[in-house]
Length: 503
Image (cartoon, rainbow, N blue to C red):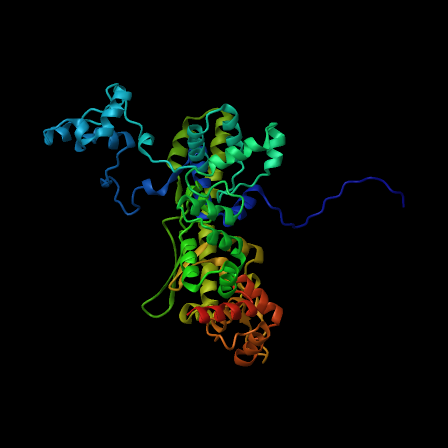
């Protein structure tokens, strides 16, 4: 049979990820903040989308006037309603005195910027509305705060240049994270000049910045308080013994008695080992739950989505029909058709996302009923596969739904990922135990131990196996203990003995 090219038609089924399907999958793993930003962008891009908040009630009769709450713009709230707020002159007249006696800062600002004075209606003399951003307090930034001080204490331009590089070399805690030798080579400056600038900058506010280690940071703060004596210097040289709670060794190394050591340790507790964190300019985001779990009147658990964080949008089909009738250009009709398809897809995807979150949350609550009722000791091991099989979904879908989502329960606010823990086999062949439950039990055993019977990791593993049938190895106990920042049995025994001798 001769080989020759030919055309054949075959009919087959296959899964294809369209762009809209990929976008729907991506919406599942977005947090409520990211989702609201995405919806805001779509509202600006698509003229057929509008928020559901502005829609009229569906049960309103035709021709019936719908009462709307009075809404005012920012300009009306600032200018047109400014007559409710008295200006500085009116307040001063009421007290029968001058403005500078009531508002000393106000008179100075008016002299610097006379055009910024407001009349009784809240508007300036030029007729423009005041800028609200001028009255918003900004959070201080560590670099700007230190640069302003360096310009006052350093005289030469060379010293200010060195100071700028030193300020750029600070980490978020306020410690100097650059090598002075490398900086001297980079700037072509003498090492003595850089050290002199560094010494001057170490006196800036907040006290303790520009330190290169924790002992140096504490020493700078103690020097500022005039408490850096030779005995305190010895204590700073032995900070490792402080973390080990070896008070007997500290008294021997420093040469002090118990009262002096207690006073010096109390002095250290009043210091700030990370002074730069007070100027952290990162935004503070409040964790808002996506799902609420409450106990119903009949004793069953009620799962409810947080409607406050769910964006609700509608498709304005009336506007689409009106504009379509007046449109003649093919490009404009194609644009409107694309906008309608995108709007329909978005509303459907948002509804499907909400239903999926509710479905996954209901299954989590069903499987973790023991935890919600009795506490962490009854937290069951649960995997993504278990939830996916129960609700007939793919494991990757459950993973995306639980990412960046929080659930509010009577036990507290938890991330959905918290409930998915590995299983630890039971020694008697019973029900598996959750890893989080094992951690909780290990902490309980360590908290209840006596100074004469400090539990080793092997002893804890044996106790877990005998008491609760938890088959866990010694290295697993050590890993969980270190994850909870609990020291070893040797360290805990030393701490308890020192505390007993100091008592």
